[in-house]
Figure 1 (cartoon, one colour):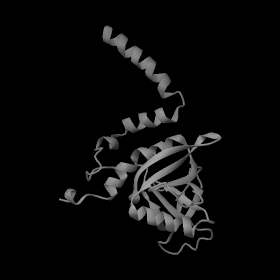
Figure 2: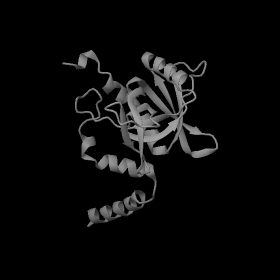
Figure 3: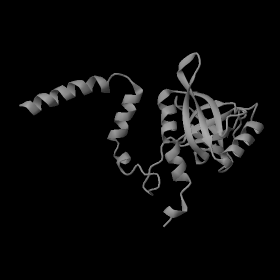
Figure 4: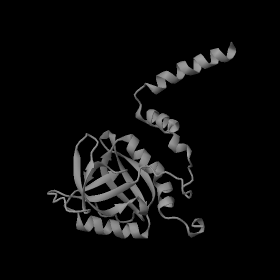
Length: 193
């Protein structure tokens, strides 16, 4: 009888949390219930499932649909965008990430990335070649927005800022998984055998 009362109370407390509309709680619940997440959380494992992997690609304004260089990808609102499949920047070179709230708009967030040496060079080329042209932020194969790449700020070390205006769940997911994705995409020689 006592166990039944505890179960009823636990259920009564859990139901409002699940249906409260909070995206972060719902995301955590879905992630906890997803059987694929139970495989492993070790980024050195071959069974590790990457999440929130980002790519920055150029946007194709007039697609020629010529071969593998151009691809149509889905957007969050159900539409599509054409991108050049040659990546300009990616999670492979992001050692860490942090979420930065956007001043004046608490619902949108930008990201700062701690990049490795090659990532720093890529960002310099990206911000130099595309300073007046918007590029696409692609997360797990889905278009999340476009932004103008800004040059790295003086004195910021190896941190670069991506001002794209993401929702809280996506921004936190990218930041939370950046280190694990970096380790998985850049395996240590010791883990090859």
